[in-house]
Image (cartoon, rainbow, N blue to C red; front, side, top):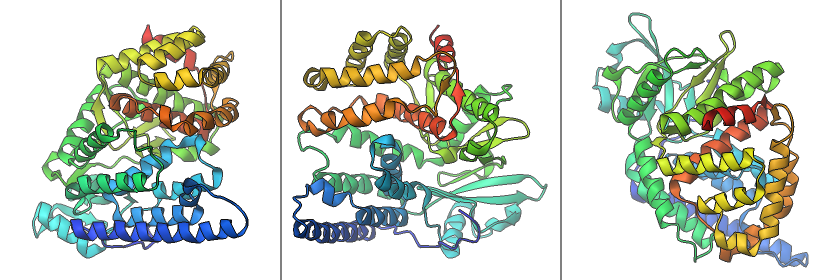
Length: 439
């Protein structure tokens, strides 16, 4: 977001206020569905409910309302838009991507009220300079530049008011929207996933916890010049304000225009980090949002930001990925399918009902990954196969399956990293990295 883009908008704080926004969202979506339904019926079509819901007009309504609410509501919208990956129609995917990039910021008076509450009425005495216009605005907080009296440059993340208290209600409201839209079968039990989403979001809203996770990552990667993690300033950090060293860098996705070797180096460093998180650290930062990574061109360094979504990786989850990688490296399609079911990546009923479909998807992915030389993330040869085969699995709602929540969070990081690799069209020795990681 540019500093000249004035998008100040006060954040709804109270439960009733936020519920009212969800009510207006539901009303707007319902109106859009009715209008689209009449249009299609008049043209002789018999549209499905999901077709009426997922229209460009409704996508814009959802994106704007979630961007206004922020907090858990916006976070869930960002997760859905990223995790859909290649499976959404291109037009809808583009519109929903605005949920990731669009966020209103606090008006100055609301920002001042938050900082007075956290640091006291004379909070400005800490700084030689504090930029009131944020350099970034996201789902849970916005980031400001500041300079201490000794000249040290800081990045200060300030949490939006009401975020922590609204998490449970926001998650429940988004779940209700999914239910009433009939996008999720009533037979599918989402309660474990929703409970975990609430817990995860509550942890992300605890900036003291995030500060400790950032400090731990800085220690783990100390001495490895490929990575930079900001230093924590604990004396100016509270549960709602995270203060850290400002580390400059360009947005990671801008490397799409860089030389091939630069793109390859950046993605190799990121993928190696994911493998170390999974098999060495036993801890993973599970949010693959591109904004969490920046690149220092002069030092060829990957800057790591935002550690709120850091969580432990259970040994059983790491063992499942180890077994799946082993089967993939052996090009053993049967073992890949069996391991995927045992680990909960795939539902047994879905495989039983659609064995040939699953096998074709596995074969397409393994064939692409198994080509000689570094894997070219720009080679999306398997995507048309997945797009052609996946609808049969999606349409059979009786076999829908929710993996273990720990697997879901790890897979989200893995999938998001692959999405960035595709954006950069990087070439990475995936086979060599995988072999070294599970050796």
